View (cartoon, rainbow, N blue to C red):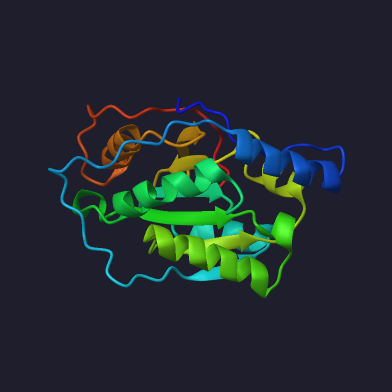
Length: 210
């Protein structure tokens, strides 16, 4: 499901080698860009959007996920130095503005602090990338070690990685590499309240971790 090369998260052999592997992985990745929303899809105009961005440890990420329960939630893990991650941001931004998906929530989790730290440089890079892509949904910049995030949220390793939760926090589907936008749209629509039970969604069973 949405498999594709990306930048690896899980190199456990040391921070220096890990950082180099991430940069090389994102530079050498050859992921196909996800398809744009079809012309017939109604999309709310981005306008002068500015995503809310703040640093967050793992506890705050869990608290944010908990606070967004009650509706489907699409979470995208990304970083500015990951080329496939940045390439798919405009598609995700457009998807989040679609009128048909207005009942869903979107959240980004940036991993930039692993390379440039927890300061203004990282925040500026993240905000600039989001603004350039027209992203209006909130983003958290994770500050903390790699293993707790990978284990605490059951991440597979590479980025970009996206996951869809239902309104009760159950993981419905995951996409490793740039997500197939049409597939994501169908999955979110099927998870919205009132969606027909016959609607097909790409499911990937996993325990409730939200």
